[in-house]
Length: 102
Image (cartoon, rainbow, N blue to C red; front, top):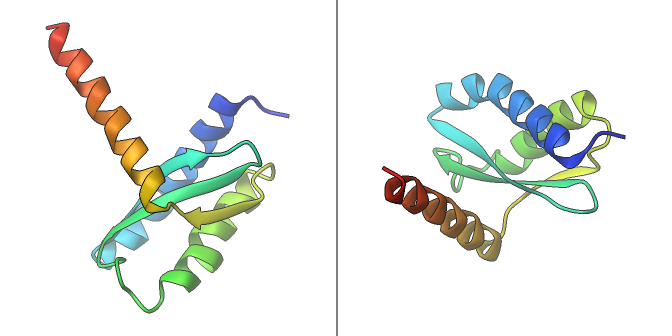
């Protein structure tokens, strides 16, 4: 069993490998969170937002790739609004700390 940080690195690596195809269609996917049940949450951007093929892309593309390559992962789902707010708040706080250190 891998530790959480190693799992997150593996997940990010797999997302990077599929991003090329998603970006080619004008979309993007971003890792948001790995929960205690080994469920990955992602956010989609660009052309993916509102796309009729999003559920298929998430299940058969992104989800399949991650779960095949990182067997500890149980599912891949879209992050909800609360998760996104927490993620971007933390990201903003990290950037503010970097600026304070300069």
